Image 1 (cartoon, rainbow, N blue to C red):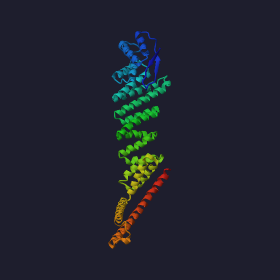
Image 2: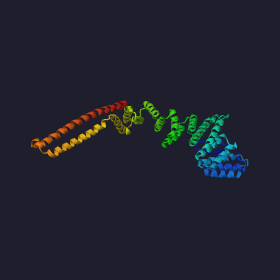
Image 3: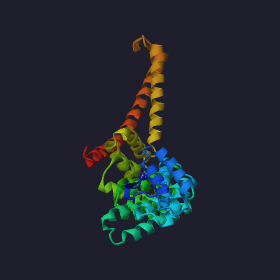
Image 4: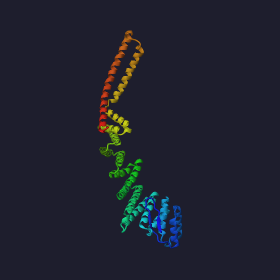
Length: 392
């Protein structure tokens, strides 16, 4: 007959030989393990423990272990399940694979119930046990399974450390897990934690996580997030250099936009950076279709903001055009239906005076417009250069 072991998601199926049941206790245990429904199996195992445990029967420890697994699988994350798993592990009468599963169950339940020090301790027991079991003679065939157990236990350790506020320790344990398993999923778990800190604006906690992830060289997105974190903490010089290094390798619209905005902010106190900011924003206008208008508008504002008289010219043009309209309306209302010959001497003098004023103001407007066109031509040239630079 076979002893069937139920396992949680993270555990592999385990089977071992069971001697032919001779006693009533043995027969009851076999009956329990043959039950098809988990609820019925759990009921019978509890009855077995109630009737026969503590009498020296050979399956007591496995009854504890299998009941712990069933309850864990049914999300009974409580002291009873922990007690069953710990009793099974401490008995010394279950096989190594089952014992490793017990440590992991205990660690995970402690983690889920916010007992972080206990979770870490149980995960460390799982690591020590798996390392010892892996080194035993005859375990070569199971080396991959033990490696998986060790890696998973490091992940549990890391999560317990992070929940306890030990970010540095958590990163080290995640690194151990990744080194052991060589699985991108491990880095994905750490990135989720880092992103939760980032979204909560806890940048000091997020920074070391994304420094580690960026340092692996396996996730370009982490480098971008790290630069943003540095920027939000006022570490602008490091963030800007990081963005520039990334942009040199891979020219993207979002990267050009980030650099342009950072330079634009710095240009408020250092005008010498305006031209660089304009260049990156214009690059972004061609590389990021969704932000194209926004980037162009910001670049234009920065560029023309360098000309201290630009806004004054706009104001003067508006004022001159208002005067021209006012004088023109006066001429039309007073003399629109008359030729100059039909005007009285006084009307003719007023008419000519108004015409002179209009002509003079028109010259002023034309001069101002010409000056602004020259500036616009320079900006248009920058736009053309950016288009060529990004290959659009």
